[in-house]
Length: 426
Ligand code: URA
Image 1 (cartoon, rainbow, N blue to C red):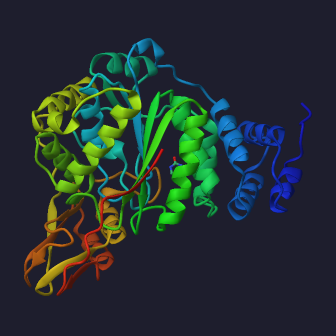
Image 2: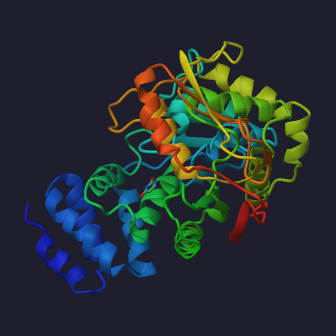
Image 3: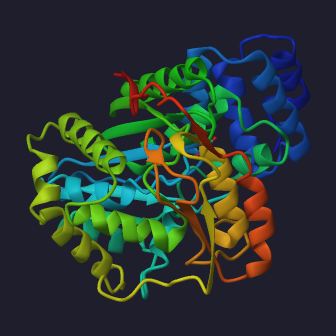
């Protein structure tokens, strides 16, 4: 078959700072998915996009081309509104776990197609797989049936959604081109639009433990994604939220499930509760449904939905969670106020303890991770327990402890409190 364009011409156009035409974009995404455009050519194009950017129109067309590379789900026969949440990834970010059942309490179907962790941020599926019996892989029919019954499902995104993104994301990962805003925005939004949700709330993380360290770039990413969603007919809202310090007191798979269950039981760390409720309010508003999520967390309705959701996927919500075989403690070096607990350092430590993976084929340890005992702003005394490290493989302690060097900063003065929600884009 003769091709409409030559890959080199498309690369050169973007290299020289030109706008790509709709036809060029449609062709290059499709030809890459078919294997006609080679990986080295797409790498060069991705780098040219990273360096020279794309207009809003180019990003929208690129996103549409990625959606067209695969199937689209249709939840319209559920007969109820749908809402989804996507986080750009952070340390201790277990919010999806309490959030999905919480929103389902109000009759909104929550199709939460999730991924596994790579690098220092944990993956939602890895966390849930620490629950004995729980199964991430569902067919589309099983997913639909669960949404019609329980109302919430957290499962693996099937390979049929935006296959162009699957291929391109793996390539970006090894070519230094993950950070391009047009590519991140189109990657996330192509999957969410193809998934067919009616409403979408984006949690765009900002800070040391996030993709976006800088608030200006996080805002640009959020604005780009909100525009893409809105133009595709998905009611889309973004919150910019702090990721300088881990969310809650745990980073690691089973540790985070335990903390999520505490939140569903009406307790848990204040920041996890605050963000869960803030995102639930946004999801309900975007879905056009009234309700008080704080009350549903406090009175056990969200817990009932969680138990039903876990059972529906083969999990036993009452089974004891796995516990790591070895622990080591970190204690305060001085008396004062805990001024900082760096999110990236805690994420890397949890990862090195075995909670995360370096390559996508690697296994994870369900019990591994970091448990914190103090948050920034709290008074601590020298010798007080600040963190407990968990792993099945004690030779990992040395490198995890190395990652945590200088992480627990104790000062005389309390730091200025930093809000958790830094901004909202709609
Ligand atoms: N998550 C995605 O799905 N894609 C990106 O490009 C970055 C984060």
